[in-house]
Image 1 (tube, rainbow, N blue to C red):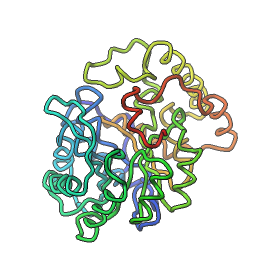
Image 2: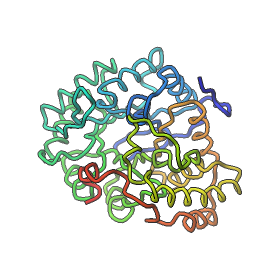
Image 3: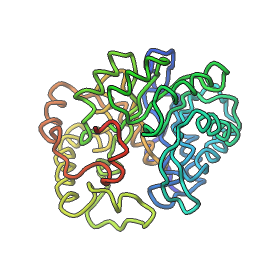
Image 4: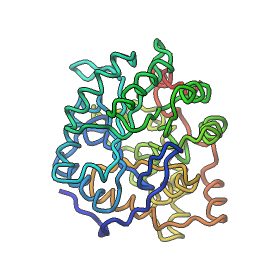
Length: 343
């Protein structure tokens, strides 16, 4: 079982306001998806130990989805929180993605009745009486966003949900949703090589007082500094089908990583730490989510909190990894089609 490479000091993670709905969280969040799904097999005991280490370090924002491992991720989170103070964490849950018993993806369902039913099952799996942030995983093309947000607003009124979030939606959808109920945050991919939100989505979110929870800050390991060309990818790992991890695209993208490594080494930091610190530098309203599945990777991510990027550092990073320099889309074409944020 992996152990941390550096000690994790209790409660060292600062806090910040996420949006203008009264939600406060740690400035770094933990994404749990990889503990159940998408990146090949995970060690459940190590996953729980990683959640415990995150809590001990002051990370309180825990992000999951009811479709991660078809409920397994929520059950795992419940187990990890056993004996801990529920009111000292913020649980963020995505819903709406439909999956078959073989794990296949069947589309999205965010109709009001489906939304409320999904929450009922989530509350039971997590054994809690409320969710801090509840959000549709994607925009359902068959359901107006006003109806979905209205249903969650009913759940807020009833006390089952504290805040409403969104995921991977564009500026028009943000405005329509916010007209129904205040939105705490938008969860969206944001990294040195995924910056499409900067043109319109981020300014709109800031205008509306909506925070950003940034996932994919290491581009699914590509920007971790640990990925190498020729690594064998498990059949259950979606990176085996991700355009950025294929052939010439991967070769090109790893050259960007090496350029970033030179900057990181000059600062006495790792590539991952600089990549996370760069996302955090985008503003106090941007909270990076790290997808660490092991304590050593978590310890490395926590080290990003000690990385201070000067103006000269940021200029060098921009030169090493310019906006739009990545080769390949962040998802395969079929998945990109579901992203309202990319239209």
